[in-house]
Image 1 (cartoon, rainbow, N blue to C red):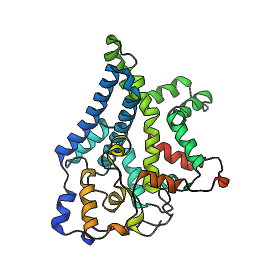
Image 2 (image 1 turned 90 degrees about the vertical axis):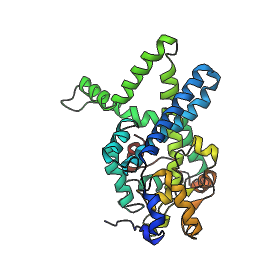
Image 3 (image 1 turned 120 degrees about the horizontal axis):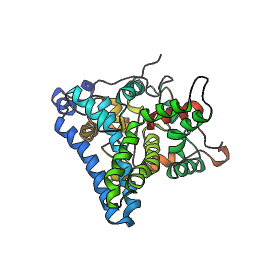
Length: 330
C-alpha cells in the first residue's frame, strides 16, 4: 500500500515555535464544547421566543452540529484535551459520538491521504462535476433527501426485506439501540419542552437542522477540503486545501477553524484552535505559496463544478463513494 508522504514539524518550525503549536489546552477544549452547545441553546431560545427567526436558527444550529462533529474529529486525534481519557469522554459523550469507530477510519484517511487506499477518496474522486450536478446535490441536502437516504432508508429496506432468521422486531430494536442518542435526545427534549407548549422544539430546532443544513455544509466542507486534488498526489503540502473563510462563513459553514485543512493534514495532531497560528507562521516563512489554498469557498465551488454541462452524467456517486459519504456524515 502507498502511504501518503508526510512532513516533519522540524522542517518548518524551530523547537520554540513548535512547542506552543503542539500544546493541548484542557480549558480550551472544555470551552469549545461548551461554546457549541451554548450557541445551539441560544439559537433555539431565540427561535422559540420569535418563531420568525426559525430559518436563521436552523442554519446556526446546523453549523454548530457540524462544529460538534469537528470537535469529535479533534478528539479522534487526541487534540481536544491533554488527558486522553478526558479527551475520549468529551469526544464520545458531548459530541455526536462513535469516536472509537471514527478514529480508526479517519486515521486511515490521514495515512493514505489521496492515495488509492484512502477511505475518503470517493469524496473527491467525482470532481469536477457540472454546475447542474452540484445544484442537484445541494437541493437533495436542503430538502432532507440526503439525510433520509443515509440515515433512514437502509433501515426501512432491511425492515421490508429481512434476512432469513431476522425478525422485524429485532431489526427495529437494533436500529433504536444503534441510534439511542437520537431517540433519547428526542424523548428528553420533548418531555422538557412540551409542558410549556414547545413540543415542536426538538423536530424543528434539532432534527430539521440535522436533516437539511448540516448535510449541505458537510458536503461543501468536504468539497473544499479535497475536491479536485489528484489521486496519488505526491506532495504532502497539496493533499488537502485550506480555504479562506470570512466571519459569516465561519459562523454558518466552517466553524472551529475547519477551513485550515492543509495545515491539519501537515500536522494532524495540532489542535484546531492552533491552526490559524500555524498558518501565519507558514505564511511568514514563505511556505504558503507551495500549499494548496483557495481565496474563498465560492472559488472552490466554481472549480469543483467546472465540468462542461454536456458531460453531466446524472450527478450520482458510485455505491462505494456513497458508502464513504454515509460513514463520514454518520
